[in-house]
Image 1 (tube, rainbow, N blue to C red):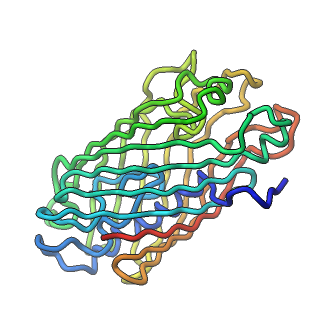
Image 2 (image 1 turned 180 degrees about the vertical axis):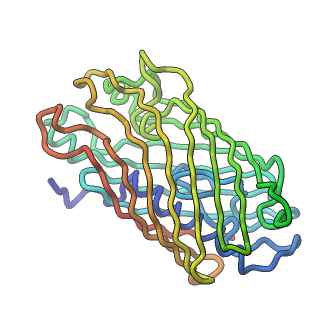
Length: 316
């Protein structure tokens, strides 16, 4: 059921693009100068799906923008994605302060026009909008300079998320229309192997990143979720990688039949290209799993969502 007027950006595809960009950024570090006075190529130029610097699906410990320890840097991103039955656009700004503190702002617009139409207008809207305000602090380590040790760069962050469709998300079974995610990330760059690895532990109540609200009456406690990223540099300008993100499953009970909104983990594969230092372009495939099990509603489709993604980011 295709709608020619709907946004073609998929919320879930966004992670891909950002993921690719972030991974590209880190891999290119292997070919950049290692100097404390200038930040390496692409080291602050990628935004993750919720606005933080890192991979598309998950934050990294790196600080966004090209600012060094004595400078302020920034990046802008716009992402466009397309899955079978849903769409998402995302735009945002990330500011890095002295390579120590990062502030971010992102706006997501998740298009549900096909599902709303199939349900006869039951949802009452064609778009679910969410604003995300984030902050991150580098606690220890330096991803590029700590090459002679096993010490990774470590950062802690938070993301405040405000969903603008309170009535809808509560109808779907969510406890709240806003919430805060807390996370700790560790990023290690192996320059000699052109390899970057990252692990993030997130504490969250968010349903589908917060797009379907936060928690539920029966599941309203914070749950730890693991997020993993890896990126490999094929050439100076070309990177490939993958990410995996665990997600909670809070909406097993709602006003819809049980299991309709069961939530799956996400994973992606990406390729990223940086034609210049300040511009990155990423293409990716992301597996989003179940968003809405249409079979339980007497509808075809809407479950097993797979998306393609394209994203552009400018870093300064």
